Image (cartoon, rainbow, N blue to C red; front, side):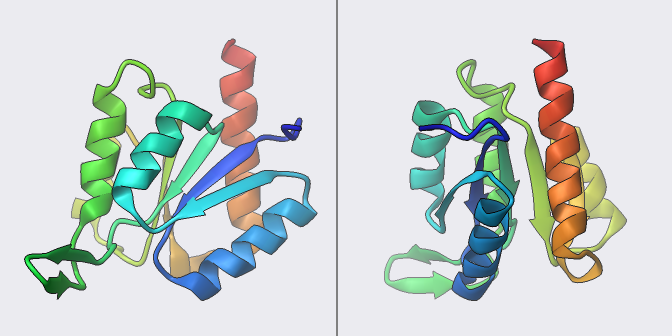
Amino acid sequence: MRSNKGRILFVEDEKNLVDIYHDYFETNGYDFLSTKDIRQALQITEFEQPDIVLLDIIIPKEEKGVINLMAEQGYDYLEAVKKNPKTKDVPIVVFTNLDTDQDRKKSEAMGAAAYVFKRDCSLKEVLDTVAKIIDRRRAKK
C-alpha cells in the first residue's frame, strides 16, 4: 500500500547514504525506492510515478569497460525526465556534493525543484524540503 506522505525515489550510488536515508524516510512514514542506475531510475520514474526524486549528479558510468567515476549522469536523467510528458511534472531535488553557482543555475534551468548540497544539510532538513515540495505539488492538483 502506498504511503499517504509520499513515495521517494533516491538516485544515488553511495550505498551507505542510501541505507541511512532509506531508514530515516521510512521511519517518518514515506515509501522509499532507490537505484544507482540511471536507466532503471528513468523506468521507475515513468512507471512508479514517485512523488519526488532525490537525485545525485555524479554517478559512475561504465563505457567500453572503463568506469568513469565523475560521470554527471544525473543531468542526463534530469533532462530526460523533464522532456517526457509522462514524467515532466515529477519534482526533482538535486542532492549532490557539487556546490558551485554554475551547477545550481544549470539544475534550476533544467527544471529542478530544489538544490541541496549534501555536506551542508541534516536528514531533517532534507525531509523538510521533500515534505514542502510534495505538499506544494498536491495543493496544485
